[in-house]
Picture (cartoon, rainbow, N blue to C red):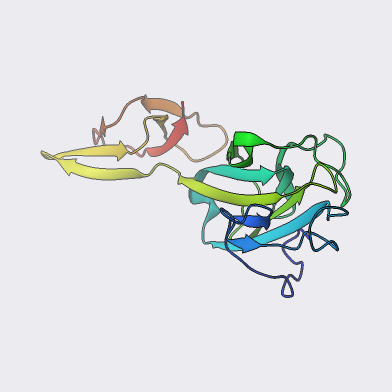
Length: 212
């Protein structure tokens, strides 16, 4: 169910916050289980999927994930787990209970994590989340999530007062240069701060940005 190719065409859709038990702040109600009053024998787990498209994952520096979960959740990106919150460390099944009951301010808290971009792919990507209850008699479920991409810094060439300048837009990166694009030529630090003035000496140089 968390793989890209899974057929979710029969799944219901809705806007977050999704859940039951807190209608004043939940926009899309979900099924709690066989008890109309949601007082007992509720479903332990509810599953969610969202597809999005990326043209070029190499342009993404990092992914910032924000998760609201009541009680616990496991988040997957293209089938690989990227975040686990208030869940046991062992393998997760449909009847695995959350690690603890969520109450008070934690019911509306967004848990944050910066996650790797390694699972991103060009084309369709799928975020999948399973939200678990701490007990079958839990009175509510809530779920919301956002995944924000931070772009990689851009290296640009400018002309200023007849001098060519290399400039970039992220102070966390420095500029490196090499004379040959092979496995033996070293990459040397050309500038630790932006901008860098280029002195045209007729020789060939290649430049790249590297995080400090």
